[in-house]
Length: 403
Image (cartoon, helix red, strand yellow):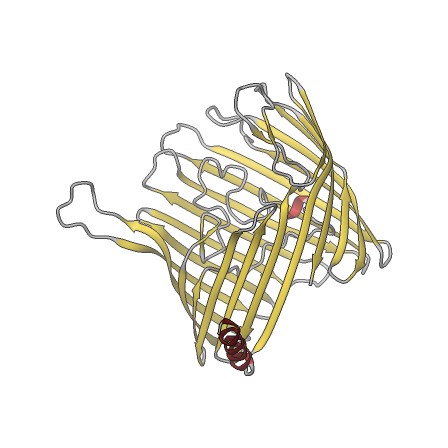
């Protein structure tokens, strides 16, 4: 009987998909560190052949374990994605596997329904009209790292994550939540204008303790306007994920020359609920130069500022990172990344005083489309006024297949 039921369900699924465009993809990635050495003022720790990337060790002898990852190392990542759509509806299901465990680490599920130019999207998903532009020739390059690739606060996110990954309108503080959005597209001059409004599942408003007649608001709000044309793209948004929390952002992509890709953004955020967070802003720029079909240069420049109400001084940070890459042939692409990260540009009291210089040369070996191995040597030199000032060196080797 179970076999009959399974056959009927399979037949029903196939029949249901007969009038939809269906796509199934599977991605697999192993982010290993074949060698990793960390030097502090007190000791040196060396690790060999780390395939899982989730090792922890007490680097500074303070009795607490520190993350022992570097150079792009991390757990094995398997992603299975199923998508089906037609002219008026669609669904997406994506699941990430956990290394060494028979369970699902994360999932993305959403659907959409269209009534002409009016579209409703619901579920968990990411939505960035202006993409991040962190182009890297290999896997896990400096420009593609989570600490700088997102618009908004990055280096100072430990102070406040209110405007972390800010132009991702369907997420809160860089994390996916259940969301419901409606958008409407209209012609505007030489381009198109997309107007969007949505609800973000979050405890926007809770009653005060002891309230005899409590009232709850279970979702925050988000509004966005996007303009697309041959001359430029523009994204503007306002997010109100929680009472007394405001996020505002404007992001632009001028299309001056095809050889000079450019993206800029400004983000402001304020958390009126927590005096330790206060308000902050970030200015982002992604600048590239395509020298030829084989040679290109890409960069990220980011300036951050934050002023918690509980502190007298403003904290500022600066990142300047770049990559140069050269496609030698169909097999090999060589690249070199360099980055300067200053976590306390003004040496303000009350903020961690440290800066980092990173250097990462490497090579990507391509077996065929979407199948490659990236090997690199990454060296970081840390400076600061605490005992944790250190240097790190690693040899990450990353295997990646997308089907």
